[in-house]
Image (cartoon, rainbow, N blue to C red; front, side):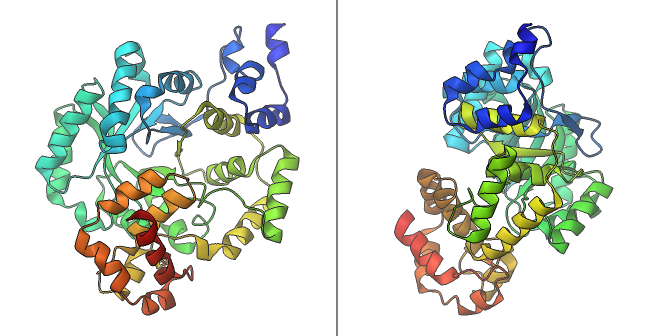
Length: 401
Ligand code: SF4
């Protein structure tokens, strides 16, 4: 009877989780109250050739998780047991919060696929970061260890392979790979030829997934048995309503019972070779909305996907595709255009001005000066997204300095 009472239609479920009231979601749509059957869990997929099945939704931990233990608990109970963090997230507070959680619920550790990353540029630095991450998270192993923000596959050299093999032999890491925000397709293709990369996390969304380069890169990684985690799946934020296609999209998804954010997740899950979506879920509303999308089995129609592609094309000049080699070679490597675009994305699409400023201010002073002095006309000519690079670079300096 209780089970029957809690059984909501897909439409009701998505509607409820698309609403803004956390309280109403938790009382009206709480799978944890399904006492008889237990909570529904997010489905899983194989992660490359690791032999591990991971949930299709990962908890993106770029937040102070020590303030979010209830959120982590809820994620765990709903099967969101792939947790992604990095030693730099929130100055270490993200990893420390996970440590707090694991101290409280040590029995959960074996069911969590724990991923962290290091920005270190030396092998010694990687070792130090790995040890610090384990100490902070109160664990004696990391499931998947990423080198963070790789821009060129040449970073994955023989010494790095030896380092990864050694740490695996010591039992400190189970799997090794990298995350990439720039030149993703080239990095992925390169990794597929190496034979020792277990996993990659890359920017992947309805804007990028249809390009020939990305399709080739995903196919090559899948053939090589590399597990793929998609990030930045919202492709630059919510659908606005200042064009016909945008209006059509927003209205169309709402009529079907989706929000546009849920539709964008679904578009990525359509590709069977994407094992998982890593999504930043800073509150219960977003967690529940994402879980609802993961549990829902309705596929997007051909028309839905066509409209998303049309929207991507119409708004391409607002989205940096991360093809850094194109624009940065046009400014003689003086300005890390792709990194500055990433700061703009954090501020404008994710509403996280602090994160944008922190990243921007890490650029050397000389580079920041160079940003305003550089001529971007050649870069703008070559940019496949036709972005107003010069204007955006100047705006970044003004907003983040
Ligand atoms: S600014 Fe243009 S060329 Fe540069 S990374 Fe972004 S999309 Fe590519």
